[in-house]
Image (tube, rainbow, N blue to C red):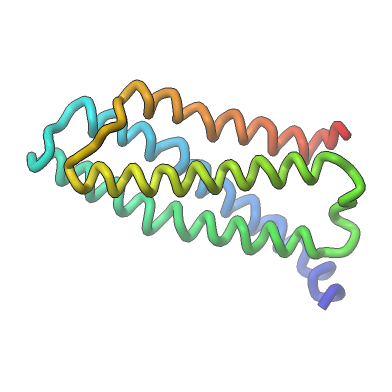
Length: 150
C-alpha cells in the first residue's frame, strides 16, 4: 500500500489542492449569500426562495463533495511515507486548523437550515464577521504547509 501511495503522491497532492480550492470558494461565498439573505429578504418571499435554492446547491453540490474530497486526498497525503514528520509542530497546527475549518463548514450547514426554516436568528453583521474565519484559517494552513515554521 505504501508503494502505491508514494507513486500516486503527485496525483494525490494535485487532487487535494483542487479539492481545497473548491471547498474554500464555497466557504468564502456561502456566508456572503447569508448576509444578503438576512438583510435583503423576508421569509416566504420569492427572493427568499431564490437564496434558499442557491445556498442549498452551493452547500450540497459543491461544498460537501469538495470537503469530503479534501479530507480523502489529505489523509492520503498523511499516510504517504516520508511526507509528514509528526515530530514537528507544523502538522499538528495544520490539523487543528483543518478541524476548525470543518467545524465552520458544519456551522454554515446549520445556519442554512435555520434560514430555510424562515426563523433565522443570526444577523448580517455576524455573518460578515464569521466570513473572516476561513481566511484566517487558510493563512495558518498555508504557512504551516509551505513555511513549516516549527
